Image (cartoon, rainbow, N blue to C red; front, side):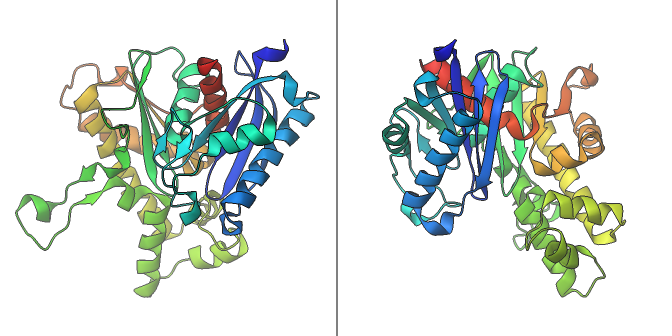
Length: 327
């Protein structure tokens, strides 16, 4: 049994997770802690190694029982060498950082890395919402928006390794169509990401519109626009928050339609904090808008547009699968 266990790691700019996962995808233990990128790469790597060890200990195991460690990390990565090329959310000292070697030195276990969104897609495809399909695209909405493309059961990285940057799909405005050069085409990430939502809220506050969001950011979000802040603002029927969410849903609906019209997958899975918190109520309008913009109007309902099943364990589960596949 020992070598049939793996550790999946999900490293983000805000938090890090490490979980011990069986070959069948069962998470035996999950440890989570803040990343604290302001401490620098050396300290964050040490914190990550310690989080891995805590997860193993919580499973009543030792590092020698682990067959491999898989990790999802933000930004471009050289997966073959286990080197992070750049990670804006983690800091400048993460440029060309040999994370795999550093973690192997700390844990004594082989480490395999890939982009965090692609790893999350692997998790949903193998053990989550997409386990019964062959063609799937996973879209994760967070600080930014990224995607993982799986066709015929295989993760597609693209010619230069950049496949899946669906957040930068342009949602074209009327001014752009009419040739108005002063109008800028905006991508889905600009509108629907957490960064985009925060920008829209800031503009509303500047325009002196009434909204409870700034106060909730202080009292509920610890200074950040969290999923809990969004949930509470919607619960209070805050008009600004409702408008921001609806604008994002329209952008994501058009994004989903673009994906289907281009590569025609069986399923699109939406993940990320907002999706996890709001669930089907958040997805339903996205689905409706997407279906309305499919070029092929036959059997539109056969294309499933669903929330992620693994929720915040998508990255950990996918990372464990990454380790398993490389051994």
